[in-house]
Length: 353
Image (tube, rainbow, N blue to C red; front, side):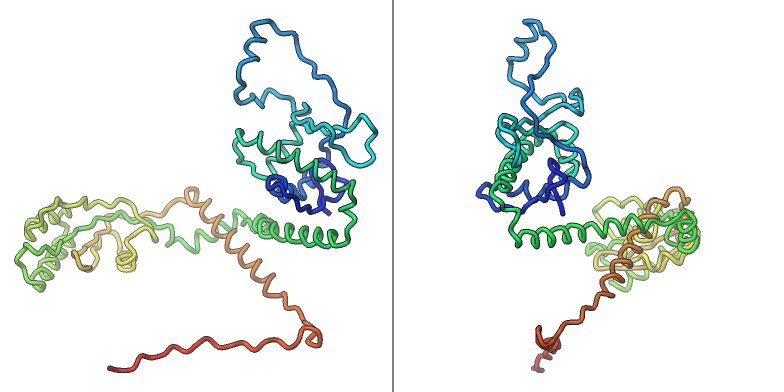
């Protein structure tokens, strides 16, 4: 069973309190002890040893404190002291719980490794309340309730199950040979195109009929295929269509599959270096693409992407296979027959007018 950081050898009960903070930290700290076998101890209060300080230093200490320089505090130093909180059986006069910096930071890392330092004080206060209520629960025998043991077992199963996908992902990392094989088999995914694009606007002020404008765009495409400069052709197109806006830059830079306009990408991908696409259009303009050059991204630059892709695909497949193989057989004499599956409602065809 799970335990809190402070007492790894005792089971942690699920308590219900009227204090929201205690309830939150109670659920947040379950099972933390498994990552930290040595934790807080119950000891008698000890006097804190300090080095002699000058009057100047004393005056400085009297000023309002800012965030403590945690890095200067030793890991075995006590950072939380909770008087009058101790487990059952603690001798009279020794009822104090202490938490070291090392153990408190284990708690923080288990809850949220990215927790800002300014939140640590409120976490420490909440954890102190949790320990106080926890010890009181032990003294009241709450941990002996049989229902609690079932709840703990279900909670443990649930938490372990939530960690399975993470472990499956860790075990799904591909080898370098597998990454290289994937790169070779999917080289088209990592091919980059240096693109130029000419835009011929469908300007209402051009005075051209739609078929005339289309014929003009086709002519521009022929000239681009013959090797004329795309910038020059686009400027000419904007003048011909009497477009008030300035022509956009024709140089689109390097693009790879998935990074182009999805409407035009299927017609760009088959192009070779120097080739020009067919004229493509939408409601605003005609578009003409030219592939100036192509290159294959080096494996070093895409290795991380490939590793992430393979790891994700394998983990998803492993989890799917695990869940699909779980087919419990239920006793119908107890559970009753399985309800009949209702077919989805048929789509109604609207009557003709």
